[in-house]
Length: 453
Image (tube, rainbow, N blue to C red; front, side, top):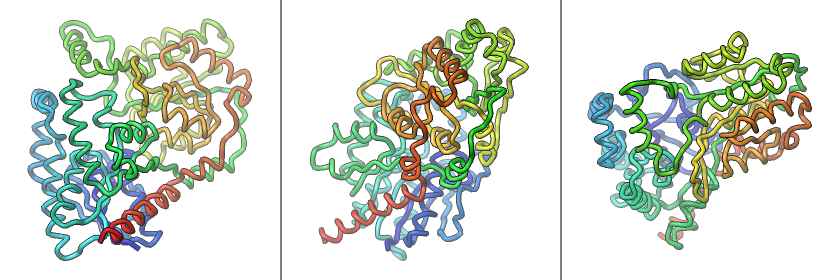
């Protein structure tokens, strides 16, 4: 088995799907038999509110690096002027300074404990430079794990064509240097393969985010619930409410900022909020007041004041449970008590060929076994959810369509879904299976490097 150096800025106890993957996959790789050392950021680099143990890492050597320069830059970036200047100049992401510090540390570490392969989680994207530099200096093979779209991001900071070319150039540099490239979605896979030189295409492999096997198994053993009060749960953003009703100068400035941020792909930001769901509930209330009386709502995340006022207007305010923040280990308990999970997506109006926004909460939705109302565009994530079964689909920007699907499901129950749960497909996408695929990729890279030698 291999001696793996796993480089990941985000790691437990940070609260994100990236940290989840970067903690669980090394843990599962050790169970397979690999010797894993994780290089990650010190906890000082994470917000103080995070405190999550994603997996048992007692069998893993975890080295946490604290970069004083990185922490200083992070403090400066709290100033909006500094952050906008960096985005406008198209400089590397702020974690670039941690990457420099990590590279120097890894260079010293390799002299005493040389790994067989280096696996780098490419979020932040600048950390691909570590793999390029280490391979050039020491000749050690490395694997690039692309987590999110970068050059083809749907919401780039300052979406100019020049910035797109710069990001694509750096991205191709990583691809040419890496011995293998692991991507998260099929859309991401197709996008990168199509623009990569032909000789690099065999490097790519798609390995999805994983599903919690324990929660999935528990949900498979549970029977159907009898529905009296019909609860709809929406897990939104935990960071800030999308305030679309402010006035005066602030309103003008925010609109100007959005004209820059959302210009390239014309993203409808309201599809990331409860806005269209509440509009749909207004229609349900008008069409079928008897059904509307049976509906209760659970909102997890921040909720704008305008949404609260509109819920009051249509008579839903007393049947709304609003949870601003919730510990991750309690999220599944909330989801399992729901009758329907609402999954809205940012929808580009000028959608390119492959759209692959892929939030980690999707896999939590799928694991718990509750039917999903997915308001997402055509693309990789929709194809994935279609395969899992147990799903309704609606147009994200059409409240009437959303209302029709809600009424149909309450009246018809599971008969309104696109089929039952695809157990075989779900079990093939647990964290254990994803770790096995990662292990196989690592073994192929090592075999290929031995053949070259």
